[in-house]
Length: 171
Ligand SMILES: CC(C)(COP(=O)(O)OP(=O)(O)OC[C@H]1O[C@@H](n2cnc3c(N)ncnc32)[C@H](O)[C@@H]1OP(=O)(O)O)[C@@H](O)C(=O)NCCC(=O)NCCS
Image 1 (cartoon, helix red, strand yellow):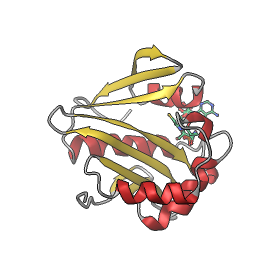
Image 2 (spheres, protein in one colour; image 1 turned 135 degrees about the horizontal axis):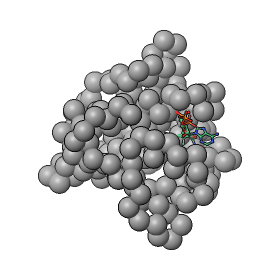
Image 3 (tube, protein in one colour; image 1 turned 120 degrees about the vertical axis):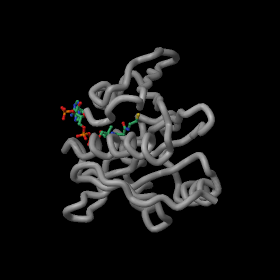
Image 4 (spheres, helix red, strand yellow; image 1 turned 60 degrees about the vertical axis):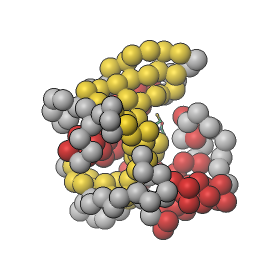
């Protein structure tokens, strides 16, 4: 079982942990054509797979998925996640970023990821974060660069990026 985490606000967005009631929407967002191709497992997921994944996710202490919500309207903006959390080593991977279609390209996912970095630093006490992005995903690559992630390596069509949390996380 994972610990309960309070929601975390960054600018116009709040991130709060994923619940079973969010799963229909997150499956739809993730399966959209043009979205799923940006993930290593690019096939559309079935509901049974998605739900079974959620049941096993609930028992993992090193994996936290958040729904980002627009504070003013309460509407769901997208999903962000932090996983492979290495508390002893002070680092973790972030990703599984998906914008809700109505909110894509409005700058709110940038706030949601900034909020996730603040959470990682202040609540989890981590020192650095890393991520992977598919080479053809220019939009995501630009976003991560603006958020202070530096390219470390390119291999097999993937770009590996990392960022220290020791300075300011607001860009
Ligand atoms: C990646 C993703 C989560 C980003 O969310 P978003 O709502 O598009 O991003 P935001 O509007 O918050 O981000 C703003 C930054 O993203 C980049 N960006 C946003 N739209 C863009 C576009 N149409 N073309 C190029 N870059 C774009 C820019 O760097 C922008 O910064 P700017 O506002 O200073 O110009 C979203 O596009 C998405 O769901 N993509 C499909 C799934 C995916 O690729 N996930 C990441 C896997 S690694």
